[in-house]
Length: 154
Image 1 (tube, rainbow, N blue to C red):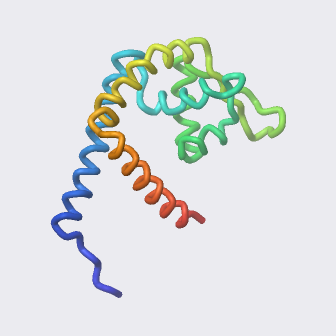
Image 2 (image 1 turned 135 degrees about the horizontal axis):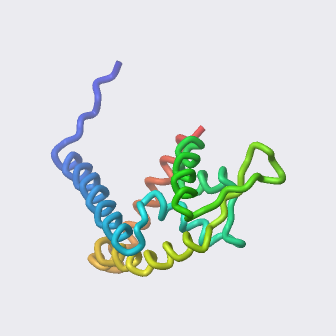
Image 3 (image 1 turned 180 degrees about the horizontal axis):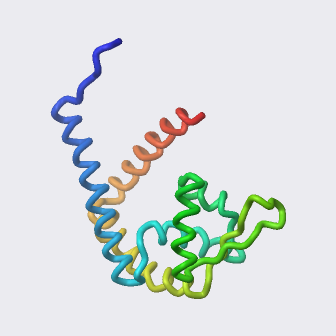
């Protein structure tokens, strides 16, 4: 077995800074979501695609694929959201094993209450501190890293 390529000081710093940024940004966004609409980050993640979908509904498996969650996680989260009245699940007429997830008026109200300050928080902590050139560079870097990850999928 080959010797691992350990991180040098610069690489370790970049990796730790990325991890710290990800954690702190998620914490700031979660605090904002709870404050403005009483939503968790997971609830918001599912409500966004539902609110943007034609008819305000999606198949559960498509919703799970959009947020990158496995079947078990999406099912458990949707159960919690159903209990809170944010979504409903209906049987899929095309597939007896599938379900349709529909945004409720309460879910729509919650996302409408949260979205304006959510985007303001994203701007404040992630976009506004960067110049236009830095945003272009970051976009190119993220695209390259995501492409590399996509190449590893089965």
